[in-house]
Length: 369
Ligand code: UDX
Image (cartoon, rainbow, N blue to C red; front, side, top):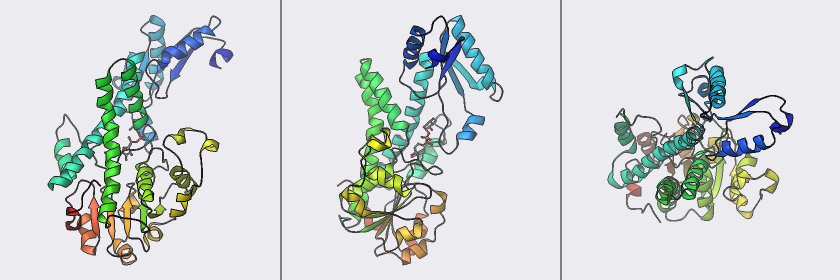
């Protein structure tokens, strides 16, 4: 389409995260249809995160521009650099060759996901040893070579990018005959899956080895706070795990619609990538799910609460009131480490918080079923 409508030379900028060498494919297609017009392809990967997009746009850590190492390629890079230079300090604009720019985006997301899987792997060891994962990551993050960000243990990372980009990286490694490198990165996803399974197993084993017929409140469904996005959210796997053991789920998320939740829970993995009309709906397990519009309704008469997204409002709920309206023993499973564990135990809850010293109740319960 670009070739069809172009009447003069063009710079085509790749913003999406793409497999390495996509620029070459774009270049070939455009050149074959060019009719004398020169196309320069640049890779300018987008690093903004959901919920902080505008801030990330105005104050990026860096802007990356990759282009051909020819005079025309360098000229195109300069043209795009001059656009960014209106608001980004020039020392934060990194210019590279095309493949470095494409690969850097995949590498950056893989490194970020790897940090989360590293701290999540530690969280399992913390629970086994009595260490506290928040204290460990604080101590580790104080090393300026490591830094404090992205070291929060959680029920697992989600979002549309991390898993997809790592699988993309793994595929490229395999295609290039590098199985050891591929396996190394695959392990980041395996630990993420392990963390979600471990969380479900904790819930089931704590609640007398079954959640069948028990009402469980799910607080938070989005893959992180301040977004209504549910793509690859760990909540899907956790809810499906609980539904598999016939739990009755009452789900509340401040931003995610009932329709979205129902669709996510009735879909197979990766189906979200397909058009809506091709996604299956309303299987029988949906009878076990209700979606409500506040945390108090979700928790009323529940046996347990799972916190799956770190929404600020979950930190300030009236947990005494919630406890009074729940079945006993009342459980809280905090997948985001946001509640005050000591305070909740004082109220009477049995509390599990990822990577934190275990409640007496949980100590003898196996974490892996
Ligand atoms: C990510 C990258 O950060 C961004 O640069 C890229 O452009 C797109 O992908 P995003 O998917 O919006 O952005 O979310 P991000 O904030 O990176 O969080 C991803 C997942 O990791 C979330 O589920 C989040 O809850 C989880 N996470 C993050 C943790 O579990 N622990 C942490 O310490 C940080």
